[in-house]
Amino acid sequence: MTEWIENRPYDDIAIGETAVLTRTVTHEDINRFAQVSGDFNPAHLDPEYAAGTPFGGVIAHGMFTGALISTVLGTQLPGPGTIYVSQTLKFTRPVRPGDTLTVTLTCRDKQDEKKRVILDCAAVNQDGKKVAVGEAEVVAPTEKMRVPKATI
Picture 1: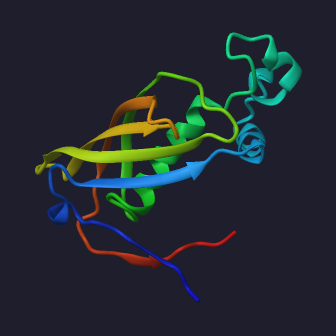
Picture 2: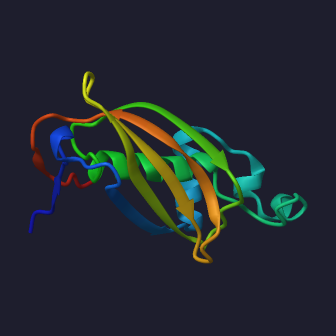
Picture 3: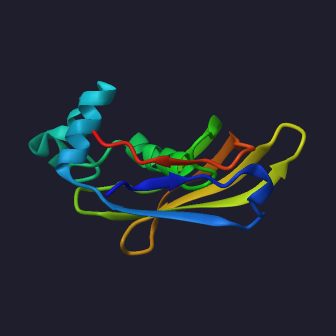
């Protein structure tokens, strides 16, 4: 059975509208992110080394959380056809394997002339503690789009 992803065209997006993604971070996620990004910092991959850091253990790459924000932008709000223009992020606490992150994007502003949408971005862990906050700016698609979800 085909899964679909659908966008929210610019004219359909409302100020205050939100989209949410929840994901539990695994060691495999961290290892794959290291492979894709080339960031082999031992704080992310070596439990013995990481135990001696201020974090006391392995932590996920900060940009792994940033990638989850990108996931929401590209699949939910606005969704397929979105062009990512900019992102600010502040990482406020470490993310560890086993943490369940809830990423919430909220439309804060719309700029009609360029069809740009400004979204507040927040990620919290399973304890409700913020792990990242920021702002994304995107060009939203102007036409409705429904596409099959790609499989790899």
